[in-house]
Length: 359
Ligand code: FAD
Ligand code: EPU
Image (cartoon, rainbow, N blue to C red; front, side, top):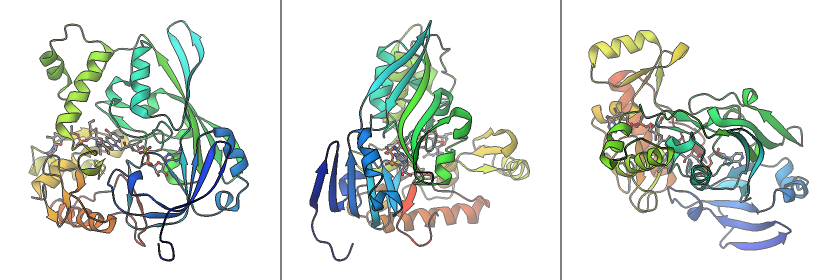
């Protein structure tokens, strides 16, 4: 951002810190350079009330940031970045095998999954090792290995910037879908402060997603338990996905596209190997990774910006790529898939700082 040269802490209050012209390079898993005019780090949810009166938070451009594992900075953020670093996990109700658990937005998602397993709960094991915070989990309704987080969410506590008040959204109001929720459609209206989960100790395990049963067999686990399923999923994920602590990435860069029944039937006919899954009224969901690989773009590279040679759905930063470089590669790949298959790919991560967002 022009006019600013160094990070400068400008203030601190009870439960929060303010930094002017803050670097965001260590706050996104693509590890690209970007700056925010103001960074507010909130450690105590109560501080949000005080901060909500600041003009910058009340009505200015505001970006809520968790661990930055689903965001691409293709430019600087011209306003305030709010990092919610609150902590706390509490069982607020227990009836028989059922519990309701309230988790602060700043908790690590993966730590919470391990906490739930240690308590004897079942259900979150398929979602182990997904990076990010609990507060971000409802935003795109994180999902993996046959499970989506929305299935467990009873309510989301948030600050509503439109109405300037604290609200609680019910499960139905969250409108969860595949990589979708009400929160995604109005970015930065909602500041998620905590999430309530319905958890139980008596849930049937889901081991039908490709690879889990085989991995359990390799573990020699006997009767599968939630912890063993988590272990199997963690092994699969570690093998399949590039590790962001070794190479910058944000997991899948594209969503698996939903296409109508007519296009699905045409593609199925022409490409019998193309993986597709029924997607209710939407038609069918196609494997974007397969489409990219079949377009010859797996491993495609421009300088340090590339499509991973390990997994075709992952855009990687080999070192010094900028967000704009990564976005250029993503657009080239999406263009090639569209040209070959007539299928439009949509970006999964939020893209910041370009006139024309998306791919
Ligand atoms: P950020 O990237 O910081 O933010 C993401 C979005 O959420 C932004 O729009 C941001 O404004 C908003 N946001 C964040 N916190 C809040 C809040 N408290 N209130 C309001 N808005 C908020 N995702 C999956 O679904 N399944 C996977 O299997 C999966 N695997 C991944 C693997 C790797 C290696 C990586 C790097 C990412 C993967 N992801 C996956 C994507 C990512 O982990 C999730 O989207 C995660 O929920 C992002 O959390 P975050 O805290 O990093 O959010
Ligand atoms: N495939 C290829 N080439 C590749 C990689 C995969 O053709 O390079 C094919 C595989 O053969 C397989 C299919 O693609 O048949 C699906 O692959 P995979 O099981 O790895 O799942 P995915 O569709 O690539 C989705 C999610 C992941 C989630 C996994 C597991 C999306 C956009 N991605 O990936 O989520 O972890 O399933 O459930 O839905 C994320 O959102 O960031 C993410 C990593």
